[in-house]
Each structure stands twice: as C-alpha cells, then as structure tokens.
Image 1 (cartoon, rainbow, N blue to C red):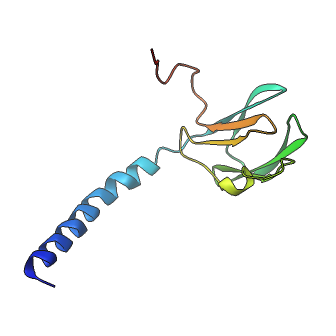
Image 2: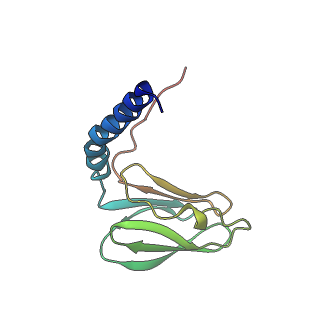
Amino acid sequence: MTRGDRLVVAGVLALAALAWPATYLAAAGRADVAVVTGPGGTSQIALRPDRTLEIEGARGPLTLRVRDGAVSVLDAPCPDRLCVHQGQVCAAGAALVCVPNGVSVRVGGGSDALDAVIR
C-alpha cells in the first residue's frame, strides 16, 4: 500500500466519522403515528404502546405488529408475502405496502399534500 493509498483510506474514514452524527440525527426523526389505507378506508394508529392489529384487506386480514415505535407486517394472505419480508419501519415517510391486498401503511401521518408535481 502506497502513501497515497493510505491518505485516501484515511480521508474516507474521516468523512465516514464526520457523517455519522448526521445519519444518527436523521434517524432520530421517528414518528408517533402511522396512516393505514385499505379497502375499508383510512385510519391512524399510534406507534405506542406495543400491540398486534388486524387490518381487513381485499384478500383477507393483514396482521400488523407495533413494537418499540415501529410497525411491521406479521402475516398477509397475499401469495408472495413481500410485505412480510419488508421488515419494520419507524422513520417518518417510510411505508409498508401489500399491493395484492390493497393495504398501505405510511409512517408519520401528516398531511395529504403533494410531494411533487410532474408536468
């Protein structure tokens, strides 16, 4: 390893060390509610206390787990169960979607304002 290689490695490590607090603070933007949208309408659920919920979807019930301020899909009647494998989400703006069942869970709630307009 040449001296230049060592300088590049040291620079990358320094940038990573400086970026860590920013990523930590960004992860601190956790939300208190999630908005659940399904065939039956839209509702808000609190991300505390810990519990298990059943949401009725187009193909059957979807089981959600709320734990430690995060939400995840435990069970779903869809064929591939991709929503179950998405894991848990807690950051504001994150979403879980079960497309065949017609259910989505968006963390953070908030307004229904547009994110962007494309012309």
